[in-house]
Amino acid sequence: MLTWIVLAVVLLPLVVLALAVRPVLTRLPQLRRASVALQRRAGEAEMLRETAEALQQRAEGVQRQLDTAQQRLALIKAKRG
Image (tube, rainbow, N blue to C red; front, top):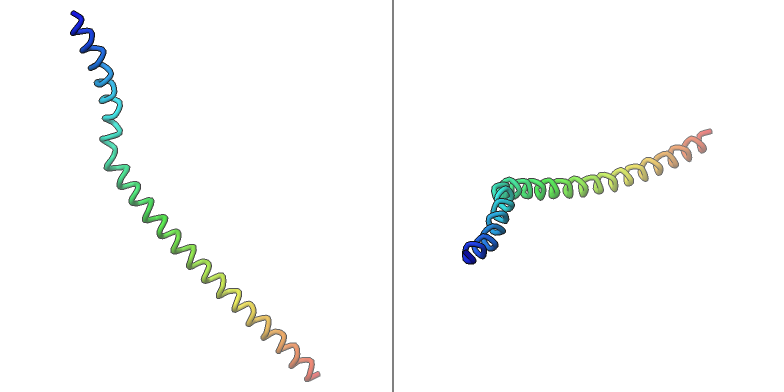
């Protein structure tokens, strides 16, 4: 009788643990795919951020050129009249 009690005390928690872990183990492939997709999107976001920074720098350069052109145009207009 004592053997059955010991077996029940040992096996019952193991069965409960197995039942609790089973849903997680069945979802592991989905979680791996989601992780890969998330990493890919993070890489794409990083590339977009770098592109946006480059475009920002280019826009600042164009703005400086525009400012210079406007100053020169103002000088030319001032000389004419």
